[in-house]
Amino acid sequence: MSFTLEPVARVESARAEPVDDDWSNVEQTIVLDESFPEDALAGIEDFSHLEVLYILHRVDPATVERGKRRPRGNPDWPEVGIFAQRAKDRPNRLGSTTCRLVKRDGRRLHVVDLDCIDGTPVVDIKPHLAEFRPHGAYRQSRWAGELMLEYWRSHGEVCPGMVDYDALKAAFSVLAKPAWVKGDSFEIDMDDVGVQRLIDRNPDALTESDFWGYVDTCVPGCIEDFRFLLPPMLRIWEEQIYGVDSAFPYHFVNKLLTIPVLRYGLSEELQEVVFAFMRRAIAARIAAEDSLEVVGKTKTHYWVESFNDFGALSYSFPDLWRMVWSAEQRGHAVALLQYVTSLVYDEDDNPIFAPYTGERGGGPLSVRSVSFDVNGVGWLEANIEFLEKALHTQCLLERMDFLEERYPGDRIAELAAQTRAHIESNRDEVGRRCRELPHAFTAEGVADEDTIADQRTDGTELRSWVKRLDELPASLGALIMGLPKYDEVDGKRAITWMHGETRLVLIEDPDHPWAGTGGAQACLEVPSADFKRMMLAQNEELRLSAVRRHPGRDELYVQAPGIGPILFFSRG
Image (cartoon, rainbow, N blue to C red):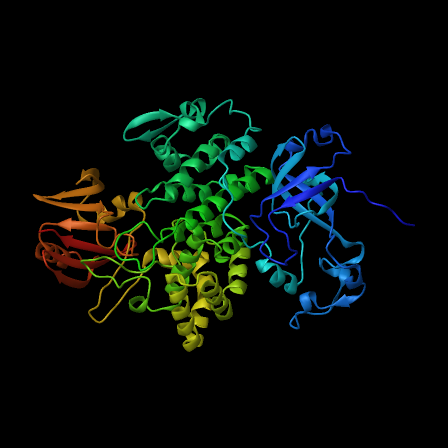
């Protein structure tokens, strides 16, 4: 029995050659054949994804495989039958892909993540239904996972409109407006603001200040209104990840991890829409990187927290990793160099980040850095397993080779060559650091990193941080001198204590020389370091770790039970 297939459409693609990898972010359009009326596509725009069957028309029939072979001829992979792999030179030369529909324009379907070259004949188009997804646990061969590591790597520049907020809103339009809000008010600067008022307002007009109290105080019982308000919160999150002073991304990500809205409050389709939006927003943010040799407080390399946060939120973290590590865009290449050098070099030898000094700032990023601190939360296990496989010495060497070839004459190529030589001469140490990094994203690893960022002994600097300012007052106040109150100091949010005529200030100070370097951004300000040292001597619960003298300022490093390290410093 034989069949004859006639194309129902053809693909217009930015890719003209049938290469194996780098298929993400390729501009593709499926154009319906003139033999079909346009209404053959009626209603297709109601679906987010399409299943496309097509002919691999550039495959030479003489090369078709009918038995078994090693995928891509790789001697490290086993011989498997042609029906146990997705190779293009297969019987009948049929290919299939599930891609995302961006929009319909008459007879034209604009899609992404379709691995077809220009002119590919399409023999069928089907809407992808959730009910046709695999049921139960799935498994696949290890070699298949290794083969696919680079398959969906980003190709070329980010498509215009990559972060599509309109598509996000359209997807969430299926949700009905909450008929009743549980817990109708929350507090922002002592003013009661109704949740209902947020829901009733134009979502495009909502700003960061509208949501501050909401993301701080909403509880798991608010899933219905939280998911209804998710699109504008995601929009604000996307805007704020470009800055260094906004704490909204931190509070928002913590709330996403606290309230199970992404796992249990959304359909699988809406989950994918949210994760796709966040993935592309982070990739676009990283694409904006443009600075090498970072010194002091700048707006570079703050992408790493958003990047790492995604590993705790979505199983699609590998897609984000591949997009960034493809380094096809210069911003991604800069970020890749920042990441790799911070992983393989000692702090004071990093060719990109100048060593920290009290006068100039500096200091490298922490590749372990995350902005969430929900107890018992770390990366999703599958993402940790991915990192264990993807991050190794050979991977770093290959990426440095790529940067040299991709950016000749650019400072990127020079630093990549220097980094490659360092990796080659320190293979064992670099390999150890690669193997240890995945543990940093387990719940235990995140908790450890959240307590102490970096600790030195023998008279050198002890640098530490305190992240959750809102949780400090009761415990820290009880240790020192009673209950504190919120205040404003030099235009910055602070917690203040009065002890006689002495005011102690726990101040959020983004202008502090250590801000953004993994050092202390929350400090206790006292008029006299000697006075503070005398007070500490009378408090057995607080332990003085070190004293550092600087021009115009004395610094005392203190260990507080249940809180961790704190920096006290005097001004003037």
